[in-house]
Length: 606
Image (cartoon, rainbow, N blue to C red; front, side, top):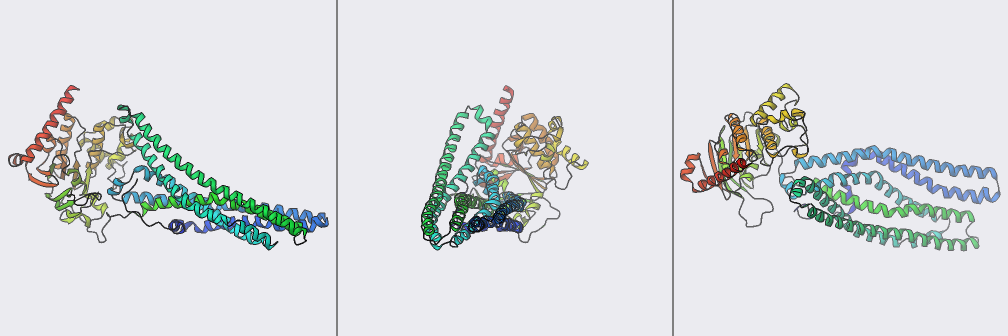
């Protein structure tokens, strides 16, 4: 479903919800004020039967019109006060509830940004999205509405039940004894509904993932005529969610049945007992009427328990889902005592580097198995190898997108794990083969790594122009709003080659000491690639670069070439040296040249 982490022991519902207290603490005074106001409204409701008993046994029985008016005004006043308290409850809790939601959402997003790439590899984006939007909103509604009403209604039931004994012990005992089955019903409901609530929320996350994948892959689905296949798969997921929601509905309906039926049985038995007690003179008409008004007043709090218990369990499940992310261990963090590189030279070294993914099978060989490589300051090193040799994985270690599982990666002789992440990623910039752009302007996308600049300043304009020129991305100035044109979601309004050039410009604009390029020119035509390579030579003359090469023309940019085979460096040298000495390199180069030739022929045919 979401992650491969081991299941954690299930907390009790109170302990699970108690994890929200740090978020709710700033809002507690007003939430408590809202609870007090709700209790005030409940108190007015419980006082009405007592005033009614006084009116029936006193003024109405005696026929005193003045006292009848005063009794009626008293009941009216209690009703007005109840409405005022209800208004105050809403006024107290609305703003702080939004503040709690805001803080949880901020911390959740901050956590997503800080968790390592390995976490995002394991989790579906739809699951994270459903937690961010649906679950956090549900928690806010429960804090400001469900939790307060559940507390107040339980207290109302307890206080009201005690007051029932005020008129006669037999009536109160009958009402309470008949209500005992509700406790068993509530226990059963919590056990079954909790499982269904978690299943429903997880299925909603899977559904969000399916929608996201279909929207992002709409071109592929249309091109291959697979829309009906996607719809069939989506319908199956919708059916599963509908089935779960119907099961939830049946459980809630069954709870409501018992919450409706049991009080009615209690009312009937109490009516029989009350008539008998009244007939033998142990209960006045006013007392009997007040008892049933009180019992009726308790009906809504009792009936509401069905909704409030289901709300409670939904909130508990949402809290579990949120804290699964918030409590996810983060293995890639800043060191306790960071080292600083004041004047970076740009030497990048891999010292006996080993790496394997967390889900690798026991006994399986490391994906990177003892890498030894030094890229000298100002040197351009091309990294070549057949598919699956570990080239891309190797590039992710320099900026700690992943951490090595053995050995160390060094920048200027310092283990990269000894540097603050912000500093490390300021010294090393990356451009990926799969160019990801944000829903923002070209300017914002290119200058995303220049926090030192006001992106609308003259200095920023100069840095932007230089980066776009090096990446041969002049087309940006010809867009409808020039470099301030929004490129749309993930930059899909641009071609693949245009996105790659914007991403390359982004890496260049960061002015790093080390530039790591993972085949950033794969989507370019041959002529554009040649122009970009010529411009890159100017940048690479003063910048250390590690370039993953899938074209022989990219290899030509390099001072030296490292050959990667099955997770090991099997040769390092100039192009001509490796051609003479390495059979593996000759095989790799022949493969790259064959790919180049095929691409050139395809471009000519077009």
